[in-house]
Image (cartoon, rainbow, N blue to C red; front, side):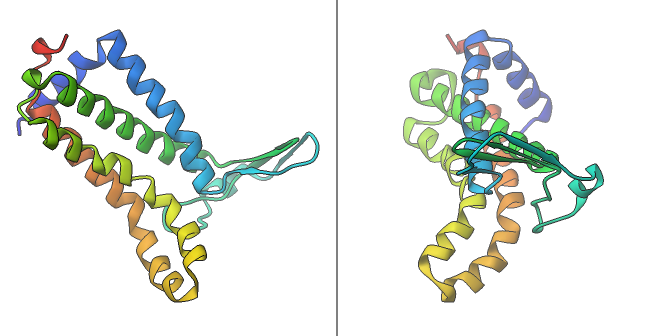
Length: 184
């Protein structure tokens, strides 16, 4: 895998308006889902309210890769905790998910541009789809009960960095085998 080719392919694909719009669209949909799974966005709230705290609290951890919010916005029916570092982490994962799914779309729709066959392209999107499990696992553990909760608490601590690493590897592998000149 030639890093220069991977970066050039990524730049060429990003330069296409339709590809850029697809990545931004997927990322914009994924980020609120990520924040909802972290419970930084939740349903509920009675009236408009905005509360803040000391900005240095944003560096306080609530888990290995989750951080304290510095503000809370309450709207009728919705509560949003503003945690800049969680938003940054979610933005990175959202961008990687968007890039992975967009390049997988190329592999499925235009197999001549990508040296993967169609089934490999679909399999390549699995890390992008499973990355959501990094934040959803605690909710699943609560549903399944206390026995699995203790196991999941130790596993969840590594799911976010593992998902980022898998998304980067998958993106690199697909881009290394993609010829942007053949993309229509």
